[in-house]
Length: 115
Image (cartoon, rainbow, N blue to C red; front, side, top):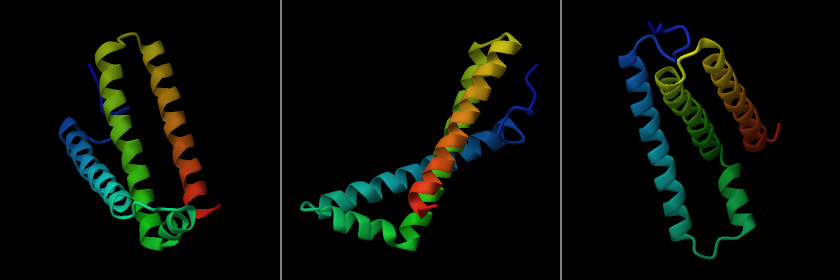
C-alpha cells in the first residue's frame, strides 16, 4: 500500500496536476531562452548578464528552478515506488534525490540572486 506521506501532493491527481503545471512552466522558460538566443545571434557576456539582472527574469528563472525540483520529485517518487519495493533502499533513494534537489535549489538561488 502506497501512502501520500512521501508523495509531493495530497493525491495522485494532485501530483499529476502539479507535474503538468510545472511542465508548462519549463516549456515556457525553454521557449523564452531559445527565442532570446535566436534573436540575439551576437550575444555576449554583457547582454547575457543584463538579461539576468532584470528582476522578472530572475523571478521567472527561480520559478523554473522550483518547477524543475517539483517535477523531478514527483517523477522520481513515482519511479521509486514502482520499481524499488524494499523500504530501506527506496527511502535511501528518495533521501538522496530530495537532498540533491534541495541543494540544487539553494545553489540556484545563490546564483540567481548573488547571495
